[in-house]
View (cartoon, rainbow, N blue to C red):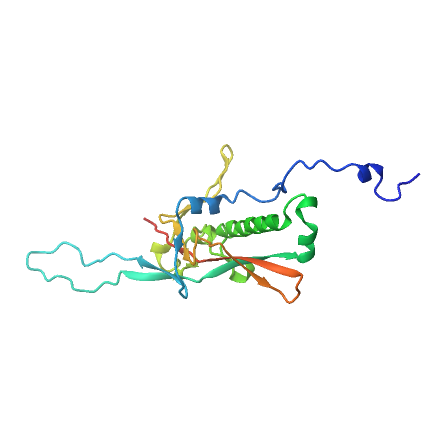
Length: 242
């Protein structure tokens, strides 16, 4: 005879819950974000319209050898400029209802659903930041952060970073080498490096960076609540062909 609904075993025996919270089976290690935070590549700035980094970009060419009474070269050589970076935001929402909280009372819950939703929000936020730190900033209509793919380019003779055109100014180019395919050694990929690292400044930033902040707002429905998580960042980066 068929069971009327869930069956005798389900109706009579509880499940053995082996964990006290959900096991992470989706997020990466977020290694780049972790490294930038742990190694101190983070700066904090209060307010401002954008992030600016002063750049020393030229040699004073008046310095040379002279004869005894030769007139010194008094040409003024401009050697300073500035790289400018737009401020960008990464944000998200965590939605929960009053009914969810009522159902999730201590006596009959498997884990604290609000606490774990907030934890998932922080991890999701970090995952988005970590991904963008590797990118070229063109994602989502150019709203993504300028990451390593833009700052350390595989085509260093082109592209604009911080408002400075690497196609025009050689000092702003990173170094790059392309591998070749050989019959014995196989294929080697292209490599790029830069003489200057990346840094960021922002409301609180990290690396090409980020700040964690959170706030909450109530929606028009009394049973729907939204927790927001956001990051603000720009990047002050440079490269050199020295």
